[in-house]
Length: 445
Image (cartoon, rainbow, N blue to C red):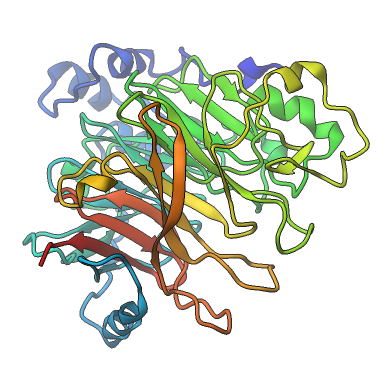
């Protein structure tokens, strides 16, 4: 199987558009005569979807009005009561920021401070605090004219492009903040449906993708593989296409590369702003007992192999591969985790703190979400962790930062998914069990 099959083509029905998007600093001007001429001429950006063709030509689709979520409800007040149980270091406060159904991974934009929220269903939400009182005023369905399929991964570029990574497609939305007020948006599939992974490998399991735009202006995407332990007959194919790994591509979908393999199912990654390294969480093998194998927090080494399927997490060998020798090439490229987390806590979204609100000790620390176990007899997770780094950029200490979403009997009142920094230096935590986003702030008083 050739990896080139899964690269978006450089040619096609809209090569000029791709060239413009890829060129220079990716600035996008609504007043650009060249772009307007190109799109208004009827050039299709997705020949297999009528709505995408219309959107690419700046034509309306007659899609119904966006769904809006009421924020002033009894349910919101009930969640505020739940938050009274959350324990954090002195000086920190947690509040309800927004009700967002099925809230998963988030991206914060630069102008309106809109928070884009992915889900594991069929909706992307835009969440906006319009009067800047630290509580969202509007939560609206984003671009309902596009039919999303598990649009979990959202990431936002410094120049105003929103990227949405689905089960098997990557969408780009130029000027997302401008078009967010209506049902129709400019929407471009930079990786067409069926080309992110082989169509025959589409699954209902481990399909929550995540993405980030790097300092090199490229798009980084984590691709989970669908099995508890990858069967031997799938290993080579998955390595070629980057399933169970991390891939990189240009922002128009071209020049796809596989950067790392041996990753079971990463659902969180972020760049260290100090040295540019990419860090990621990884969820490890189930069915080996409550206390093994550990979850992982890793630092990316290009070309690195992170152990799966020979390792279930950390140094724990999987039962399926316990009697098999690790190939010498992979063993030579093995990268051990920076942090071994408690087993089965389901470490998901993460971020590096660069704000000025929190105390100095948190500068460049990693905040990460533990979703909570689905199968451990003794419940664990459902909290936000913080990891501190040394001067060389390596992890030295990890500890709970916010916890209390799990009762003594193991019942989850909330399940944190992602952590992202908000525009004022506070942090936002998404919760797909409660369908909410929380805001954590700090004050010396």
